[in-house]
Length: 438
Image 1 (tube, helix red, strand yellow):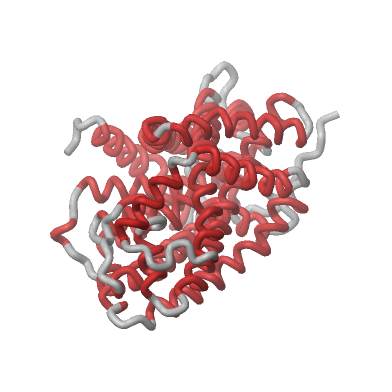
Image 2: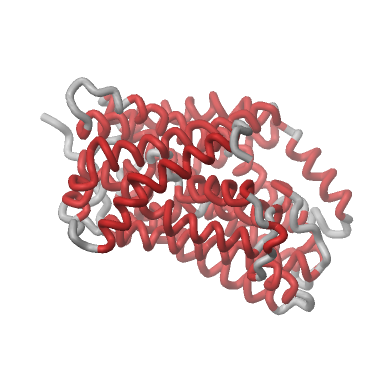
């Protein structure tokens, strides 16, 4: 007898858990420094457009595959493909992608945990920008300390995902996401009150067309995939967890996408006005959060308090993302191997360590895993979803799964985007990464 599949207790549970995955490291850490590097406002506008015209259709397509099949990626393709077809191989690409993501980003979780403590303890007080940069380099190179913090994060993650879906990830998402929203709102208000903060607002919302480039557009597309988690298996698996009768796929996708855009804007409003108020560099890359922001909190009144709150919020976002990723891998292992949740959790921990330890010990490995995730598995996975749903499984079956009116404007829009626009844009992205299109 087949085991009854776990389901979310409510639609809001699905939405919050999915948003929790999407607003993690990709949005709160990655988006601001990429936005800073590509000129601010124009990049933000491009990102929003990409989210609406590419992100929502592909996210809806991925969720609908999970909802229709009630299985994790490999099983989903097998259930929906024609007999003898090999589309299910794409399911392994999705799973490799999410394993890479939850593995190579775990050093970042360790950094955040340490920065909560270090900021609260006043470690950065009196340091100048060079000293803070040197501190980050020395700390991140202390592999034993960071590994200990990684294990602490894994323990906290295990405490959540060892429970069933409703008592684990859904329950914690209903606490963490509202808490994150409050923290972000407080920090935005604090930042906007600083003298000179208006320059940061201008940077975020001014369209500087001199900064426009094909590279910026394609980076915005890549950030859309990364922040929504398209082709990372989570959307498909969470779709398979939806309750029977809950077919609000496109509405849910719109809510999740708009929420991710909102968090990206809020993250920018948290960081850029503060940084501009103190004349700090916006295009400082991945170190923006760990090098530039301590300088900000050093300079402003009550900086230790606001800095501690900032890193707590940062950890909430990252943790929400991590538990969703772990849940996806565990669901795959339970589906494919028929093992218990606890055994799947142990196996997921091993997979995380296999990727995470090399990423911790070597910047080259960290960058390799980042490149493979963004330049290979996300692109190929997104292309597979658009072709499979658009041309193989078919838009009519997606419409039936999602309860869409086949004569309606929404269905026609999704059809054009999934069947034609998405594959073309993803192929252009792929060609640009290999230098064929410039």
